[in-house]
Image (spheres, rainbow, N blue to C red):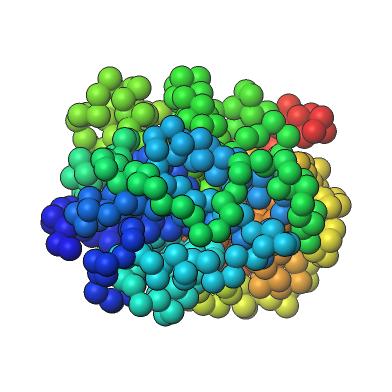
Length: 487
């Protein structure tokens, strides 16, 4: 097969160099991270392969039981997305085979068996959590070509150069490439054509879409209940996106950092849907630009500037700088440095690790155990509220998340202990946890993507310092504290 060359070739990475088997029964799209049937470069490429090979497309989406931090909270959100995909696939006549592992059916070797009957395998090139290892494992075992496709952001990560030390270094790269990349965004309506159902039957019992009975059949090691009132899946993601664009975008620049109850805030609430792959950041950018300017043909500002690049609207600029520059910083860093996020020594710039190491033996006024932190039993009411919000709602207000991380550094026996506790708490409870930005966001609290800040302080050294007292002076936090008490 010889796919037509295009800008988006840069998104494709062959991870198993085998010839395409034209005798295969289908093209297999293994949906691991971009769990949606639209606005998905991996799905678009799989459709292209199926059309050129004149083979049906099989979309396989699986959910294991043994992933790290598995719980009813994460499981429900993913299952609700699979239920949406099942509904859409039936409506469009697509071959969609969902599998959910249960205590009675492990599905061991299932992906490999599906791959061996395929012409080739297309999957998601997401640079975090279990996805890279799963892709590598299949590539090392199968005799079929495996192609991983990047649908992480507007600009392909491979086009953004080497890993950077600061967001300011990546911003001009993104902005320089944005115009051309945005013209080649993924399709809102993938060209399935004749690649739909041709009588293929799944060689295993597919999941029936019953979320509740599935959850009742599983006993999770981590008892983390689903978040009440929060629904996962592409359908809910579209509602959340419309709500943000219509009701909160106009207040984003001035109010996004103000800790208030969610119903009064300006935060988008989109990060869980972006994390689980139920929503594409390309669609988010499209809807935001369209809502502000009535078109996506806006007049771009000077490359490299934080303000004014995405047109004249300050709310659009503020939001897209967060949604593209800062989000891409995390994905881009993990894309180049996967594995370095495991410890501070391998993750941090030399200056940050050195200043923390210098102050490791400093006396701490407070030292809390992991259990005390998890149960929000510290002396600090504002920090306790942020941790309680995380446990109860699966999120922390975006400004308080920074304070949350900084204080754990201050209250732990060592910086490494603090880092591991933060990763655990975030990945266990946060609906947007286990994400590239989970790791880089926490690492920012330890100096990643930052610079030395004088004066040199106990425990922190030259790491940027934050305090609950200063936060309470900067913002009126009473309404936020009352909100958390009501949870």
